[in-house]
Length: 236
Image (cartoon, rainbow, N blue to C red; front, side, top):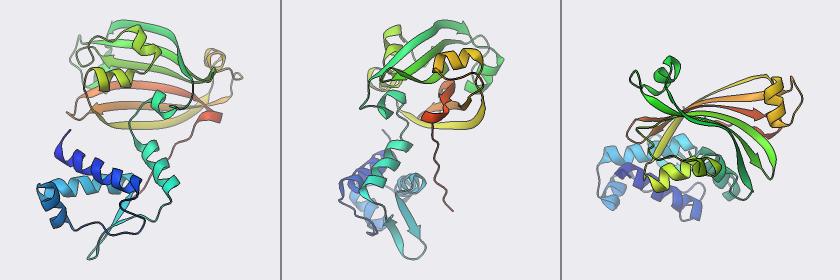
């Protein structure tokens, strides 16, 4: 973990734990530099992440303050914004996977472009239905570069791929670019999601990145409309 990530994580945990309370002013940047024994640029980068996450605000000429949020809202924001994967999001539920496809293929031009791969690169082609308490919630179709995620097996697909990436391979998934659209379910999609043909479904197109900047996953996820919500935080 990089220094700015350590500072970001530490301050976020202090906000979650109540060490820094709503509307409280955080120490000035120069004081944070001394506390964490680092540069002003590193502290600024950590604080910018907290601003983007919606936990703090910067007031020009006054300093940096914890947003006036309830503890419940703080927990909701931090859980929503983390790049944690499906299983952790439903960590208090019974999550299962029905594997439709698991094979190694040569990346086509679209996947090469999305993941910035060299020609003739190989990827895992993963197609599965995710179920929560035996209810189908989403159909996932993902492409993951073999060279960046070696040793992926069927048992990992039945559980959490992100857990394998983070805990077994020791990699850090830092960010994701997402695009949302809506369409009517095809007969096949409706069958997998236990809904009616032509019912609305939400589509999430995602490219996930490691903290090294390397892409780690390109995926298309098709969600039941009654189990989907997307949120964003807009800052000036």
